[in-house]
Length: 213
Image (tube, rainbow, N blue to C red; front, side, top):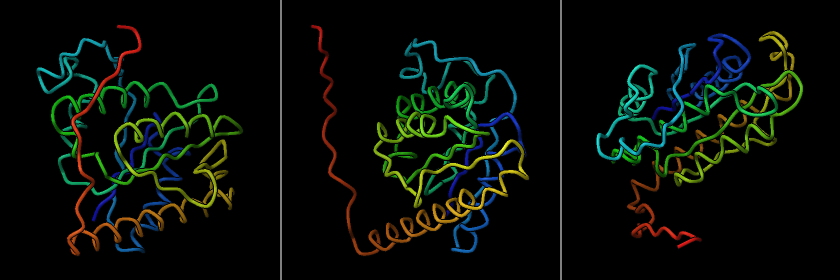
């Protein structure tokens, strides 16, 4: 089993990475593989709302890494953790622009099964505040995608202005380990359920209700 840890920070080895690194270490102790995916510092074009991905199976913008990421999901990940720094009391602009398109393209192209029913979690890092708003924002990508959300014993956040300061947030780092163990437990339960013949939830045809007709 393998978990993808998505680092939505422009800093490759910054505070968000430090939190994800602690998760990765704990997952390894639990026998779960993981890898960190870096969003990088390149420009990310916001979604144009053109709907072309439903026809093309890909985003029409091809130079910001979104299509590559959706293809990357095909490596067969069993769970996901999305990490973001706090910018202006919410998730950073890079990760929201990226995930807006990545989730839409995945489902519009018929690859939503790479995310659907896979356990997931959000992690926020901040110097001081804005963490719960960031978690609320990121969790919405998962709830609309039928992804079970994994929690720790507190909200999934760490505090610090530098990686060293984050490591001094003993409660925050402990919660990263608890989150990782809860993720590992969920994955093992799912594996046991599949071996026992438990089926995924029955699907219905999607219904859209517009309030103005």
